[in-house]
Image 1 (cartoon, rainbow, N blue to C red):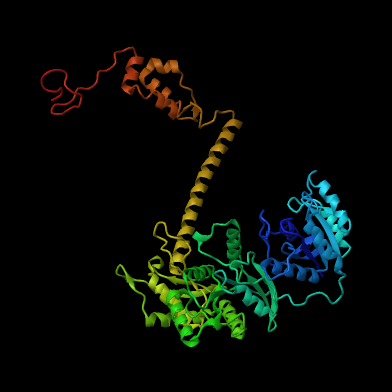
Image 2: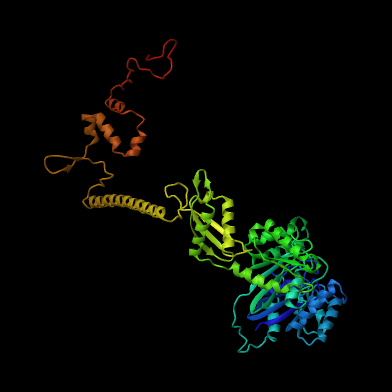
Length: 588
């Protein structure tokens, strides 16, 4: 059983930084300016082997009226009552302030254990301020640094004394995952009011001010035996209007909540529904693959409700065809009217979002869809869908094998998606269809991931080419091994290497005897031939170096004679040597 720890203190003392340190994640928004945190936020964390349930609270303000600061103080006091231990954090660099003393007096009156933490105590600058905490009457302060992680061992030793004892029946048997529901929309659309109405308590800050919620606050809840996790998010404005740093951080936190959600409740003001920003938020949720439920809040302000609801549904079908059939729930978070229709619509949408369709039913539907509307012909050749299967759910994703898949028109893809949604009753669920084709193994640049007869032919050709390559390697290896064996045999017999020696065997009637041809005898008998042979015996590189001198000149010069003149061109031939003087070219 984890220890429930509430982190409290005045604004801008580093509570959210310490909260993120103990949680191990950057969950809470952190900034230098005071008053960033407004709602109390829960998270699971640990310090060593000590399991913690953390509660991040807003900065304490000494006000008691109907202002926003007073409502934030009420949230902090509720966290203190709920927690097992309160961790009172103050800034050791500034020392104990008057507001710290007021808050310490409130903590002393409550029958709850309190641990004092002097934050920002790294270095010598915080040593003097940490000693001032003794006058608060809450015990010895613990110097820590939430930013750098200093003093965590001392904090662990202080919290270990309040660790709850685990009983035999405290283990949870039900480990089913909750349904994650993100509540999104424009600022001041009634999102936090809706969450408070569902929970039956004032869990989140609400009010007429726009943009009260900054962090994405998750709340665990149970409805009809099902575990639910509600995530209240900050309002999303147009990107061009978001200039403040805190609002940018809130927007990024909201988008992150949409990414990790399963069902998205798009809350809209019923008096001004479906503005441009609402359409963009709905499109974002569809692109992320989340199930969407439209919620018309502040429904008690509408007079002609039936006509207004019909017009809204027609407008939704026209403006968001990718979410055709998404459920629409009209309610009032202030009065609770229509709130009972919300969760049944959410559960049905989540069930449709997690659906899996049998392959046989898909292919039967595909044949009927093709008979009803045959695929078009592109460039005189018809696109032929062949086979379809579902690859995954959440959201339902299908793969369609077809010929000439890259030329499938977009309008026919949309027809298949709409027909699939109507036939299998999947309203408001984003569907994904990937179209693939069996590649031609004889075409260059096509993919190899095809099926059927073309695949078998391609594999047969691959095996044949591999066999040919192996045969060629075997022949080369045999020649190399034979040459090495001949060299070893010649070396054992005392003969030169047959591949490198310049010795030419002379055939006689008797046994063959290797006879060297001395260069002197060759020069006396036939000097021209001997010179040529000596050049050839040096190998291809040496022959290439002396190849600039013609062979007919080599023999004549070696014998001491005059080099032969070049042959004259025959009669009637033409050369390209240019003129030797005025008149006709030479050789004509």
